[in-house]
Length: 139
View 1 (tube, rainbow, N blue to C red):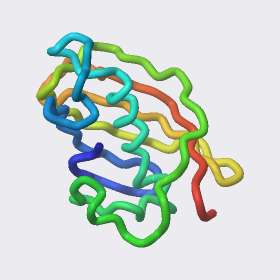
View 2 (view 1 turned 90 degrees about the vertical axis):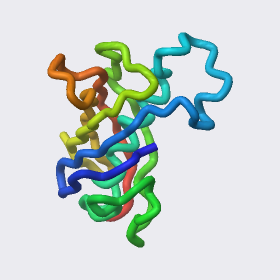
View 3 (view 1 turned 30 degrees about the horizontal axis):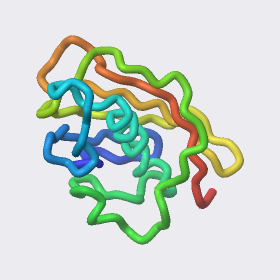
View 4 (view 1 turned 60 degrees about the vertical axis):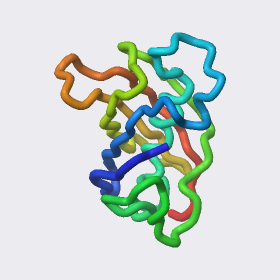
């Protein structure tokens, strides 16, 4: 669900996500035709942590498009918990989001990641945020 990785370090990464109406996951969406489904937005917040969960930020290179350029370091992680995920403002099909994910804790093969989505070109603050715990491979 990520369109492009902008930066990917050991503790923080930023990705870009264009919320398209023609995606297979939105077919049959019965909510408001203008509003993007919250569940898919939260999925994007979780997937933004993939470069971090993949052994120290090396799983997806900056500039990678739609996970096609993943390096051979294993899977990005398994979702274990969602904590305090919330929609702060409505998002619409066609919005372009910049999602920043940051590791806030590491423990026993797991990481806790805080992700925040901001609409590009909008100074109104975040549109969604959440904290997610992922099981990861490696140290």
